[in-house]
Amino acid sequence: MNRTDGIVVGVAGVIWNDAGQVLLIRRANPPRAGQWSLPGGKVERGETLHHALLREIREETGLEVEILGLAGVAEIVDDKVAGGSGRHYVLIDYGVRAVSGVACAASDATDATWFAYAELEALPLWGETRRIIAESARLHMGMGS
Image (cartoon, rainbow, N blue to C red; front, side, top):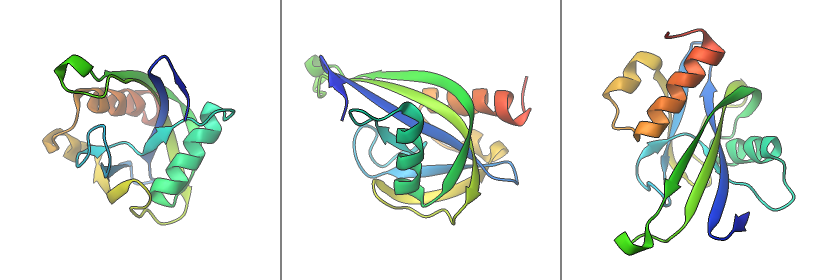
């Protein structure tokens, strides 16, 4: 785990399949436990961002992926005064393409489901997750404006 002054660095992947679907996992642990999210997790000390991303996706979904490029950065500041942990999460998100394996919920996920891009609008997603997926769709899949 990479923490400096309460900052936790994490990585996540917007995983696309050949049908243009996105894989979301239902988170087992905080932050956002029980919600649909992008697969990913904490960067370990001495680990590169790309290595952490590939490891976390493999652990959470069973998939091997190819990194397409950066999709964006999101932050969660969990205010201790408001009853949170006091941690500051910096989440570096990448667009990736599934290359092998069968998607399954593993490790920190309770479910893993492929969704058509159009289906995402109806899901109750964190605004930053929605923004990152849209940016990856634009950059890596040629979708959107």
